[in-house]
Length: 297
Image 1 (cartoon, rainbow, N blue to C red):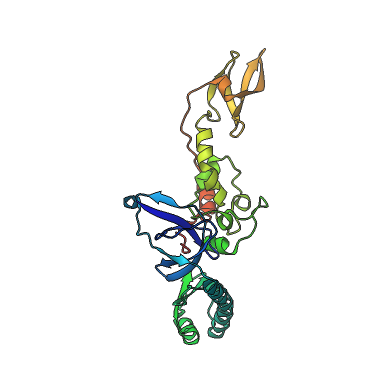
Image 2 (image 1 turned 45 degrees about the vertical axis):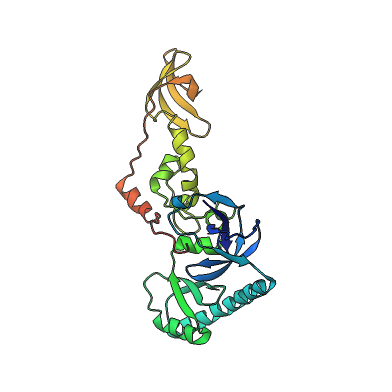
């Protein structure tokens, strides 16, 4: 068993776990940790957790120390120098005529590496750019091409709901989102309405999928024959997933009427829902799916 805490870094909401290494740590403490990229400055986000090390897939690295005032000053210097590095990278990129958009620059705490994230439609030969940057900053240069979802996660913004983007606000990982999730939630298949700021399917479709699967499992299919508690037999014409109510067509005095019933007022055989998309609809929406793994982790 080992004691770990969750730590996040600058411009990242993802939490990484580190061995407390015998230190007395509390939430919001600034710390220096050991990572694969080198030493990093981070903030403690969780209380101490005691876990079985054998359950962990990866090696847990150590918290080296609590950040001192000197460490905090160095971190401030790194942030300022990162802004200048971003400007230098933009200038050199333009001189070389490279078709790429530089999104961010960041030093590791020990300044052994300078990382740039960039966006580009195609592969970019940035060897000369890296060479010139290395000559200026005398450290290892890494340029990392990221996707549009990563861009939204890093830059942030507001969604159609008026709230901050989920990916920037609280999501640790960018999980895959599929078209069937939109169908399962009975949303109109409108590209503008179901795509996020990144141009891919909205992350909230994934966030709400589990709840909709559970709710849908209680509902009959549209077109299914059902019996009501008051003796009617009818055909389902619409369902309200969130309210768990169903509208059915029944015959009353030789006339057809639409009545609404709660799920517990009906008798039917629950079925696993299947959704079929027309080939043209599927082709138009496939481009919204993003199956690439995040490059920011």
